[in-house]
Structures are given as structure tokens and as C-alpha cells.
Length: 197
Length: 219
Image (cartoon, rainbow over all chains, first blue to last red; front, side, top):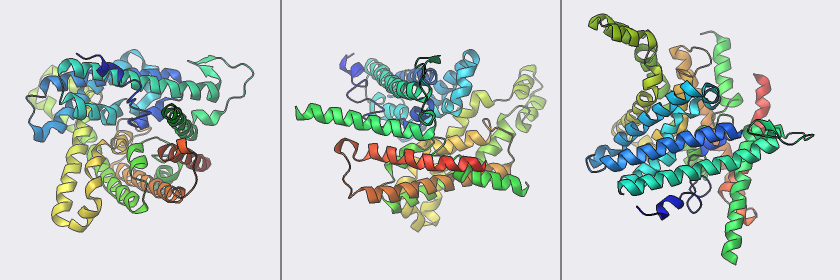
């Protein structure tokens, strides 16, 4: 196991801000911290488990049918996450709605399966899954903090900004696009400043 | 199907709750393939085609195999005569198998469409060629299959589901075309360096979504 495999997904190749993967669930679930956190955890669970299983079976699966095999593995873990959330957190599950079953078509997960887990050892694939999952969750939470704080004046459902008139548009669809666009710009700007130095 | 329902589905899916601008479905191809109008149109047509087909097939799968008291499950329960199978028929298989079965249907459908077009409509195949395999992981296709069946606010008929798939595809194409028009005009402009490319595209999408919010009044 190599430790850098764990950390690379968090900053250097963050799935949301650097690789631009998994944008649909990011925008759909970042209107509040609670849904963003649940989505991040569910995706991390699926990512870690599918990376693990795919790294285990990579020697047995014929090359021609590998994508359908990966999809079935991923879909099984998505179903587990879906049923778990429905059973124990029905309110959050209802809020996230179809984006839980849609984890199956999330490009991060199939992308990591194809680009990493199908070529690397079990230990490294596990670390890669954990790192990418943490990176995805942190990215989601970052967007959700901005949107929930400015869009409804609260954090994790608790009122934080008293006497503040919320910009409701930020928790609606247009705000999601604009916040993500500006944040991508901000990270590009920081990157360019660091390169100039 | 009365005219009012049809009208509601058409306007609802193309304008009011546009798949890209209001539901956040299908954003990867939207950002990835909207640099040129011609490729945006090709992608839009391919997605519309697959979404219509996927709506039709996934509805049939849901109604006859997956949902509670589906004909196939009831028949199996009758044939096997076992108590366990009767329980399965009463509960349905939708929660356990919807994700796996829908993704497999979509993946094989895309493969089938690709083979069919290559053999019989080579001109269209060449035009869509590179976009076709990408559609499997387009969440708009899986999304419309779910919204037609297990996650529908009210039960839909086969015709309504197929129409919804088609109109959602048209709404997707509309947003792609608008975006490609904007991005072609953005190219020569002097955009602040950190915002060049994808970031400014997202900001423009946000402004477009704001404009589309106005259609919500029609619902």
C-alpha cells in the first residue's frame, strides 16, 4: 500500500474541482449540508466497495465484458446504499430522491473502476477509493456551506445568520450553477497565483 | 390520454422542469460536448433517441416484471406455488432490482442502437458515432427511466412515459443548442483568466436556468 494513493484524490486530483466528475449529484444535493453529507457518504461507500471488489476480480473478468461486469458490481452496492438510507434515514433519502440510484451512472465511480481499480492491487485500489470519496465529500460540503449559509442563512438546518435576508436563488437551480462556476474560477485563480510565485 | 395531460408533459419537460437547467441531469455531456453547435445537435439527437427507447422499455419492464403484483411475478408465484414467491409477488422487486435492471437495459439498448445504426443507417451512425457509447453513463437516461416508473409523482401510462422520455430529450437538446450558441460567442471575448472555459460556462448556465425559472409560472 502506498500512502500517496490516499491523498491524491483530496486536493491534487479532486474529483469535483479538478477532474470535473460527478457534477449532477454535486449540484443536486448541495443545497443543504445534510443532504450533501449523506450523498458524499453514500458515494464514498459505493466507491470504496466497488473499487475493492473490482480489484479482486480484475484477473478473472475477460476484457471484452469488463464494463458490464463493473456496472453490475457498482449497481449492487448502490442498491445496498439505497435500501440502507431508505430504512434508517427516510427523510434524507426522500430529499435526495433519484440521485441515490443515479450513483450507478456517476462518472467518478465507473471512472475509478476503469482507470484505476482494474489495473492496480487491492490495497492501493482501496486507498484510491477512500481518497477519492473523501475528496468528493469535501468538495460537496464546501459548495453546500456556501449555498446553505447564503441561500437560507443556516448551517446543518440551524439558523446561523440572524437578521440576514437569505438569497433564496442560491438554494435553487440557478444558484447551484453560478456557485460552482465561481468556485471553479476561484480555485483556478489560486492555482495560477501559486504557479506565478 | 387527454389533451391536457399531453400538453402538461410536453411543456413541463421541455421548459418548466428542463432536465439540465432545473433537474441537474445530464450535465457531463452538456458541459463536455457543447463547444460547437453541430456536435451539440448530434449529441442531443442521440440522447433523445435513446431516452425515448429507454422510457418505453423500462416502463414495460417495471409494469410487467418489477412492481408489486406484476403479471410475471404473479404467474411465477402461481406456477411455483411457494409461499416465499407469493410474498415476493406481493411486495414487488422494484426496490431491490430497479437500479441493476434499468442500468443493464440502458447499457444493452445503447449497444443495440449502435449496432442497428451501423448496419442500416450508416450516415446517421457516422454523425452520432462517437456520442453513442457515452450515453450509457448519461444520468438523464437513467433519470427519465426512474422518473417514469418508481419515482413518478403519479403513475404514468406507457404512452405518457414514452412521451415524457421524448420531450425530456428535446428539452436536453434545446439546452445544449442554447449553450453551444452562447459558448461559440464567448470564445472571442475577453473573459477573466481564471474563469475561462468551464467556469464561465457554468455561470452562463446559471443565468440560463434563471431565465428558465420564469417558465415555472406556467405550471
